Image 1 (tube, rainbow, N blue to C red):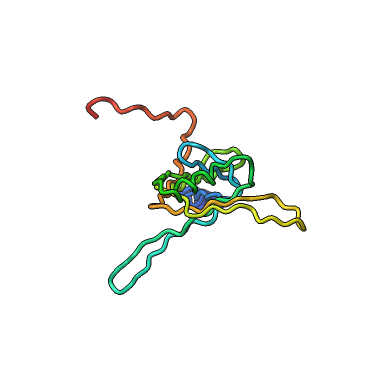
Image 2: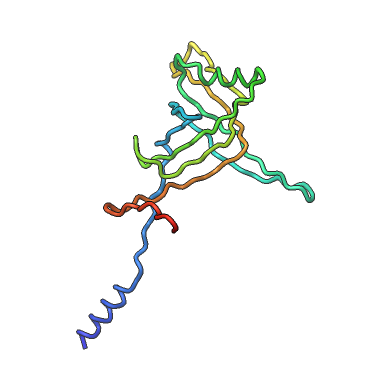
Length: 166
């Protein structure tokens, strides 16, 4: 009788599906790419989409996103904002890649489609404090596309190119 009970338990446990727990994602390891150029950024404000309903009309909108970084000798954020303020329609795609660790691979990517700067601000200056001087670039954009990363392929399993006629 004891052997039967043990074998029933073994069957019951062996048939239970295993569940993979998805790892929680952090917010401190990320990469920002504007156009084709990676830029160093310390902070990106949250991404947000909302729908406003007025009677029978629905309007979809995205909140602006602010990129914040330490001020350096680079004027590229200011130059982009200045060009748009002067009338140039200079929209660029911006990639926000959440990484699996420092210098790691992207685990998810958001693409701000057709982004353009609506505000640039430089540092507040205060002789009574010792802080890093920062600049901010606020971006509006036409669309937001969320692209989760593809799961890594197991070693030795490479995808083959399709054959002709397939």
